[in-house]
Image 1 (cartoon, protein in one colour):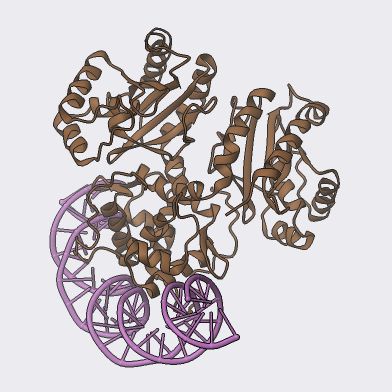
Image 2 (tube, rainbow over the protein chains, first blue to last red; image 1 turned 120 degrees about the horizontal axis):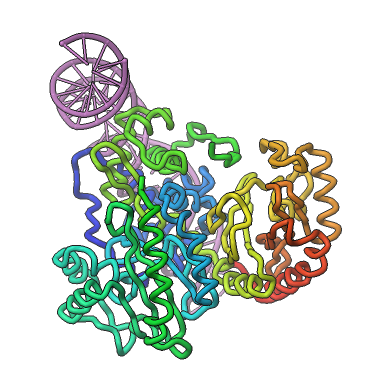
Length: 266
Length: 266
DNA sequence: GAAACATTGTGCGTATATCGCACAAAATAT
DNA sequence: ATATTTTGTGCGATATACGCACAATGTTTC
């Protein structure tokens, strides 16, 4: 049930012989572990990945031997060491460590949760976050993913890319109506993106989850490229759309301007 | 310069033929990217990993083809998609999502940064964190690592395992004196662990970084196993050791007791 | 408790995919 | 312009990963 909105998973294509099959399969095994499958037996993995049991066994034993997984005789589960892999990205990307403290400051000032995310396929991925209290049913954190088409940061990122490219991404994604307010059709979405680009920010009003509003805008590097999105989320009962615009938007704009000066990727 | 304190990296051992070499090498390539090496050319990777250039090239191209890395013709860098790998752990482990909101509440009450971590080798790994403002020179976040021997959570975790096991870990780790106060010798460390076990909590007073104090204790599941450590960190100038004991410890004990009731792993 | 079923560990022959060298081409440095 | 490093690629040899099949163990069902 992981709505990750994958792109075309061309796995056995690209037979340029420049692919290492063992790595492809191993990574697939790692991703087989998710919230709904925390502990997996060999045959579970074989079923999920559609690979031979012997192959899966070898891959799993390899992970165990390297310390990325553990095995209690029956089930396999990942160990915290696997965080090294994901965290290599956060360490190599300079943006997360630059924005994290700024995010925490903004979160203190506004008393709401603030986040930064980037696009990966049709999903946004949180790369920094300063949270106040849970306003959503799910618990968001660095590494969490949300669909781009109905999240404020996703909208902001889509709005500031070439429209045909955004349209392609939207068309590829499955776009369930998560609430009654969710915009799901391509044309209204494209119109909304145009509006966002015009006004410079995106507001999501209970489209992602009932009771949740958020406002987002793009972040630029010092060369003018959009590199991420920044947002503030709050409970709809407590914060009106007007307040988001009047009170939160200035904070966002301020941080946006600050970052534009200092951030030079790579 | 990544002080990760690895254990014996038996890579080419375990020739039980139940290992998949391609996966081993691929993961090694991923971990080659770190803060000091955000962008790597093929021959850089070959040099770092001590593998053939052709092999590294195949592995890197595999990662690119799967979307985990990108290539600008010269350099390779990881993409946010790689976060999927690491964060599969956070999603599969139930503890992080349970403690995160509790942590944020405790952080609001104490107005200090609160964290939960687990042991991985001779390092602790942050699996949940609610931060207030930067008190340390480095920016800590979920996935960050610190040496166990001189961090409060590391001490707490070591203290509540069998002493000979803790001793082995300590002996294996390199234990630089990060400040003048750092305890580095085995015997004093073991004595400190015994004291921590007796009193139920660990206090680190500027052993990890000048100006930083922290207090930690172990977290149990409902079967009585130590599953993680919980801490509060603060600036030494602002918070005395006495205040940590008198004012912070009750909060920690309270959360420890709460969690003991509810947490049943797997 | 026995029988039916599912899962695991392992051995093995085969085919293929991975390896690492070596050479040519390109890029970078001197 | 020359020297040096880096990259792309072909290729042949080897070993490696594969997937079947069988035995052993574990789990459900009646």
